[in-house]
Amino acid sequence: MPYALYCDDAKISKAYPTEASVWKHAQESGLVVDVDTGDDSPRPRRILDNGYQIRACSAEPGENPEHNEAEAHAQRDYQLSRNAA
Image (cartoon, rainbow, N blue to C red; front, side):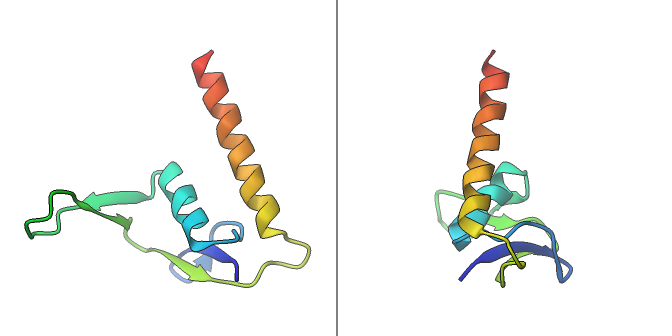
């Protein structure tokens, strides 16, 4: 089942094949924040910024979640190579 990023009930990302793929996309987009858990945990907890959620969704007609993931990776790799130059 594909997953996507939502904000206030509006789908704001392409569909991706796994929930983990959407988390990675959200983190790369700066939408994941660290919060103090308030307990003795040595690390903060990572959550989506206010108003954002990851939900199961249906792919749009003609949309391929696996292709969307590969395209996102290629775009990230391209940006990393440009920044390294």
